[in-house]
Amino acid sequence: MLPDCLSAEGEWRCRRLLAEATARLRARPAAAAVLVPLCLVRGVPALLYTLRSSRLVGRHKGDVSFPGGKCDPADQDVVHTALRETREELGLAVPEEHVWGVLQPVYDQSKATVVPVLAGVGPLDPQNLKPNPKEVDEVFALPLAHLLQAQNQGYTHFCQGGHFRYTLPVFLHGPHRVWGLTAIITEFTLQLLAPGAYQPRLVIPGLSRG
Image 1 (cartoon, rainbow, N blue to C red):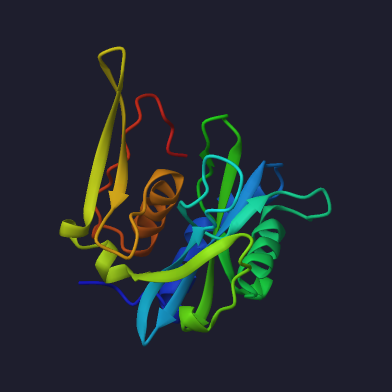
Image 2 (image 1 turned 90 degrees about the vertical axis):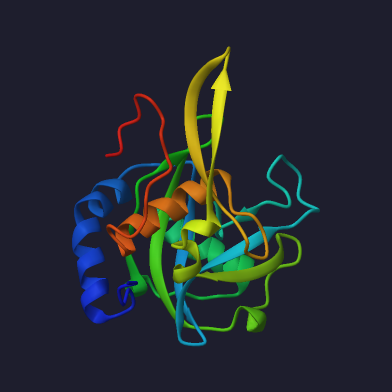
């Protein structure tokens, strides 16, 4: 049974679990930060995603992502980076007090640190947002109940030189496939919000989960 992740009790539990890591990670530099927006869509708890513009330069154009981007020297810390980028990409202003905490960092293929920031953004309709067309092609939400259903979960095994290297999660049957770093961050989020209800798919030999 899906817990009420948006209740005051659920928020307090998540903030408490994230408090130590949040204090530590806010004090560290990072290459980029993303916001993981926990929202209520027609009364249903969901995560908000973006589809990156196909007109962007780089390998991640057209990919599903969370709002976010590179840290700017003017940003106070990774939380401010995530909030600034969300405002620039989606026109969505999220007050800092709505931030629940910082999740475990992930690393892109160049080993750059990407820090996920979890925030409750309240009730919203993704169709009413006005994304920056230079950065975002589409905004959509996936209910937590959808993400937690086994039939909507998959995984990909990666091998190199004939040997197993790692397994990454994939989330299926939504408007777009959620994969890569966004799927890893989604997995971290589900484990926090619904402990015991999600079977982790992330397996990387030697990786410290922190």
